[in-house]
Amino acid sequence: MRNHKPKQEAEIPKCDTHLVHLDKVRSYQSQILPTNKAQQMAEVFGVLADPNRLRLLSALLNQELCVCDLAALTKMTESAVSHQLRLLKAMRLVSYRREGRNVYYSLADSHIINLYQSVAEHLDESNV
Image (cartoon, rainbow, N blue to C red; front, side, top):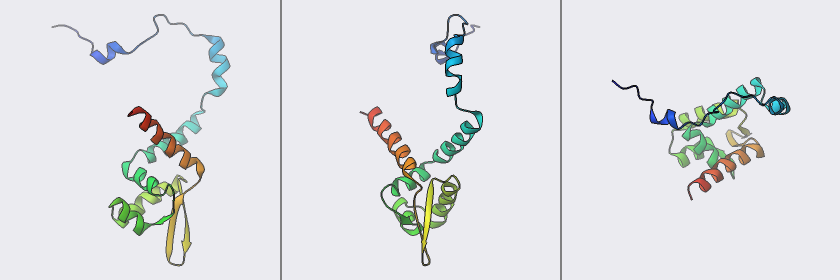
C-alpha cells in the first residue's frame, strides 16, 4: 500500500530552509495585532459570518427601518429579526432610536458601512 500525501497538502508552498529574518521580525513586531484585539475582531467577524445578519445590514445600509419592515424585506419572522438585531446591537454594529412605540434600527456608524461596502466591492471584483 502506497503512502500518498493529499494533493492539496503537496501544493502548499513552504520555505525550503528554516531561516528567520530577525531584522524583518523586529521591525514589524509592533504592527502585529495584539491578541485581545484579535479576539474582539474575531467576535465581530463571527457575528457577521451569518447570511441573515448580512442581509439585515444590507437593508440598513441607506436607511433606518423598524423590525416589521426588516422582517418584510428579508422574509424572516419578526422574532428572528429581533434575535439577529440583538446580536448585532451587542457587537455595536447597529444602533436604534425609539419614536413612540416604534423602534428604528440603523447601522451604528460609517465604519460598519465602509466594512460592508469594502467586502461587497471585493466580491464584485472577484466575480468579474
